[in-house]
Structures are given as structure tokens and as C-alpha cells.
Image (tube, rainbow over all chains, first blue to last red; front, top):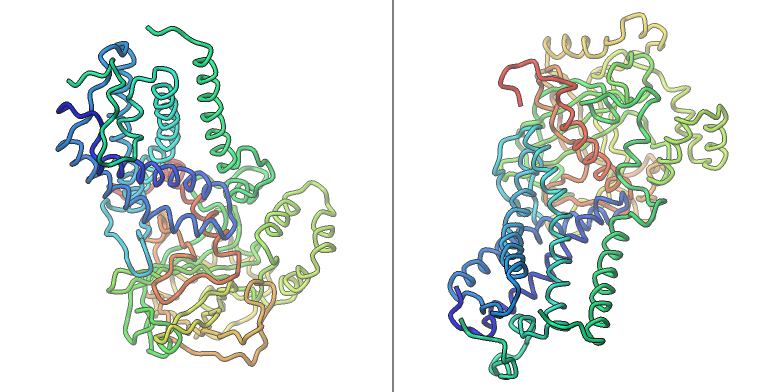
Length: 193
Length: 347
């Protein structure tokens, strides 16, 4: 996949951080709305649905960018288990970015709820009404949300581990905000693939 | 591998702190650190009778029967709201007559509160769902009070309700209604009230705070609950089935508009009788179907499912009802095996 990039392209980095905020907000809104009967419940639900659709759209763009531009190679001295964990967790993160909004949409469809995004704007049902489907999708949406959050924590821990402990430049491939200037060549371990 | 330096240990500690803070924030948001937070799960669980909930059924208003019919809008509601449902015309309705009990097998004469849920669909793909009841006021002013009332009702302390009523004087009006209001022998003779207030938005963007009621076309005939009991435990469902098979049953929908300063956030407080009322159309129940395989079974009559042109008001109940109904829906749809469909190919 890598084409010898030092960093992700600026669009990829921008999308990563925008989606990081969106997805974290989404997970907090999700558990928050499930925990209250106060009026903020409705506010949270009314954000949860359109934000979920926004994440689905952004995930599509993100996947297209990833396929087009690839990703910087991992350091060659990264232990094999960590490499596997890195690759595996990224597949899982991508999968969840797509699966969670679709599960939510499908679950509402199977429950015969109108999927209202904003006053008067609604999405069509993607599944027929069905109590068994509703239950299946609801459970998947619920439990995968916690798996998603756990994976994000792992992702954060790994990113900080690269940044603070290994100092191998992996963190900077996504973290750096500058547009024009490349990473300083102070990373002898970094090797373009 | 790399060697752990002193600074690396500090770095690992820093990582642990960051992840710990993120986890704690998540746990707090989820309510895991707040045992006193009123969650939808707690509210719904508080309805359960001593023998446990009626599995597969709604956790409240558990006993009911489906109907389909029409809402015939006369056009007058368009003055208050741009919602399509008020444009003169006929719109399909899925509805449910029900009893305010957590016991799906409760005898009719043991249940004081009767309800009606409707979902009206319009050609623009929008829906208006409403769940109304027959008392003219709600027993309590806030969802928290409602939870306390449920706890008092389920308490082993024989004085729990008295204690509750002493602390909540607003409860007395409902108690009077429950004791003195005549019972009827038909869902078709009941007046059903939204009790909660909502906001209608008109063409100019002006907002009107409203409540609505369905007034029966049938003349109410009073019956003592002892007499109703003699007619059988499921008389109301049998009666409405026969009655609707004979002729569609109708209710006039009347929207009442609050004056500035009226108590819009408190459903225990009735608005003065002189408030502006607009008849916006007629609900016609045309066909009754048993709930087990009926079209209302898997509909959540969530009162916050509103078309554009309507929104919730400062009344805190619709949000609480939405959260609790969703919880009830999630529970009962997962228990379909306990309330099996009889029609093959049923969902």
C-alpha cells in the first residue's frame, strides 16, 4: 500500500482528526443518551442520528483516500506482534466506522422507527420491520460500541507509545499538522518501503 | 527491542493516565459512576409488578388491541402547524387501545386508566405518533416524581402512597379523578388526552404551545366497575371489536392553544377552560385486530416521533417517555418467544 510516504496526506490527516472527534463524540453521546430520561435524551438522540450518517459518509471518503494514497510503512524494526496488532486494529477500526452507522440505521428500520435526521429530512428504511432483526442489530450496535471504544483506547495508547516511548516517527505520520514541510530526517529507523 | 529508560517509565505512566481519564469520562457519561441517575432501565423496571413483567409485552399499558383507520384532517390545523397531517385529506392510522397496567392479563375492571396510541402517516414520509390517556391531568409533575410514585405503588409499606401524596399535593387532583370519574363500558366512549404539551410551528414560523384531545363521537354511558367486572375480564376488547365491525368509531381531534404564561411544563396543571380550541379533524377506527399478530404490536408509540411543524415543548415528560418506551421496546422485541406470533411467517 505504501508509496514511500513519510506521512499521511494532508487530506487523510484532516479526515482522521475530524472523524476522531466525531466518533468519540458519537460514543459518548450513545452511552450518555442510554443513561438518562431527562430532556437531554432527545437532544442527544437528535445529534446521534445525523452524526452517525455523517460518519458513514466520511468513512467512505476516508476509505477511498486510503486506497488512493495508501499509508506510510511501519518502522522495519517494529516487532512482528506489534505490526500484526497495528494492521489488525486498523482493519477493525475501518470496519466499525462502516458497520456501526449501518447497524444503527438497520436497527431503527427493523423497529419501524422513522429515521429522522433533521426536521422533515429522513432516510428510507433499509430493512423490513422485524422484532428478531431489531433485537439482533440492537445487540450488535450496543456491544460493538463498547468494543469500538476499547479499540480507540488501544489505538490512543499505541499512538502515544510510538510518540513517547519508541519515538519512531509513527505518531508524526498522522499527528503533524504542517502541510508543506516533511518530517525532519532525524528518524534513522524510518525507512520508506 | 528497546531499553526502558527512566523517561520511558514516565511516558508509560502518562499513557496510563490519559487512557484512565478517557475511560473514567466514558464511565461517568454512561452513568456507571452515578447510581442515583434515573436511567430508562430503572424507570421501566419500576413498572414491574411483584410477579415480574409480562414478557414480550409493553412494560406499561401492557394490555391492548390494535386497530387501523384514518385521520381525516379538515384543514383547520394548518393555521397552527405546517405539518402535512393538517392539510385537508385522509391519512392512514395504525392505533392501539390499551389499559394502563403492567399486567397484560389484567381484568378490565381493575384498571383505572385507559389509553390510545396512534401513528398517522402522511405522503411526505413523515409520521405523527401520540399516546394519550383518559384522565384529564397527569398524576405527577416530573419524571423523577413519576419514578417515586411507581416506587411508592410497588412498596411494601401500606402508607407509601399516602406519604407520597402528602409530599406531592399536585397528586390529589388525579386521585379525585380516579375515585369519582365515571367508568365507561367502551373504548369508543372515552376521551383521550395528550396531557403533555407540544409546540406547533405555523407558516410564519410562529410557535404555539398546544395540547390535544380526542373527543368520542359515541355518547359515554357510565357503568360501575363492579358491573364492568361482571361482563368479563376482556370485555373492552370484545366490545370494541364488535362495535368497530358494525361501524367505524370516531373521535374529533381538538387542539387547545396555551395562552402566554400557562403552565406548559407541568401536565398536572390543566389550562383554563376558555383557552382557544381548534377542531383539526376526525380519527376513525375502521378495523380492530388482536395485538399478537396485529400491526400495532411492534410499533413504539413514542410521543416524540413528530412531523416537521411540531416539536417537543418545555414539558419534560415526552423525553422521559421516549427514553422509557424505547427501553420497553428493546426488551419486549427481544422476548418475542414469550409472546409468539400465531401467523406463520410472522415477524
